[in-house]
Image (tube, rainbow, N blue to C red; front, side, top):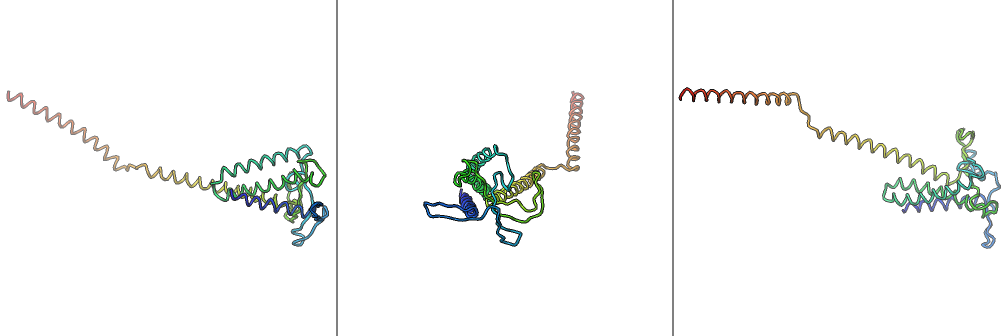
Length: 237
């Protein structure tokens, strides 16, 4: 379960980055972080990669859902996170890459779940489970269409989204490697079966048949000799 330290690190990094972008204030601790103005951008690598502060009321990468689906989405994320912890415990002795992938997915699920559950209450704009997810990573990529929306840039995302994406790709890689391994094992099993069954050549088969015929001829020869001996005994008498 040490991979959960990876999850913890990513969750903290995700939340710190979101709070720094959005800004927050805790008066009784004397903390006041201004943050970015909503919709504003800061270029980091020209126009290719920049920080752009937006809030996502729906799913990852800006995919929106209906108002009545927000509660379901939040609850689903909560139960999915619990299920991932249970599954991580069950596979705690499995290969590291599998556990690492699950830890990434768990971190991403929890990171965005915190936004949905508590941000509405913490920032005083929505009830529990109805908060918006803070996104800020803006990358210029090729144009593409998903769920009826055409994007000229990659949808703005966050560290949690990145963790889920990388984790899913790692799981697909692990699944592909396991299928290859199973295929090789099946082929080796077939080869072992083929080599364990002795092959009878045509010459051996002919020798076997000849042997059976010779046995039959010997029996006939014995009967003939016994018959001649009996005739001789009768003549002597």
